[in-house]
Amino acid sequence: MPDDHEPGHDCRPRVRNIGRVYTAAGDEISIDHLYHPDPDPCPACGGKCETVGAVGLTVNGEFAPLDPEEALLVVNRLARGVSIALETMEEPPDLAREIARFAGDPPA
Image 1 (cartoon, helix red, strand yellow):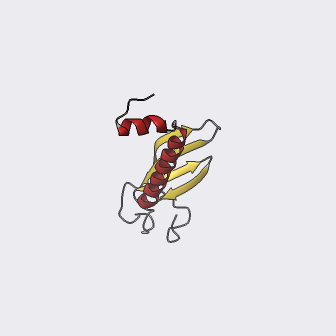
Image 2 (cartoon, rainbow, N blue to C red):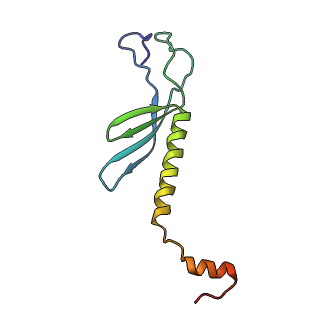
Image 3 (tube, one colour):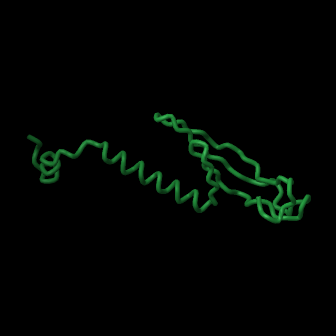
């Protein structure tokens, strides 16, 4: 909550859960949309309420609010990590067969 709010007044953003993921290791990951329904100054204290349109990422109870750009960067890096992990799980190509195929020779 920003410092300019009256003590005891709570105008934290609303939380809409987008999804929860439970890993095989027993970890819990929660992704939330954080928003405030009224972007105008808070009627109780006149202060500006927290950011509209943030993303909340919670891993095993540890909360991290992210702005949209930070969340997109995390998603991009996760997708890249998954791509690399999946590539390493693929069978390596049969080089002799590939060379023969490109040379026009039938495989042995």
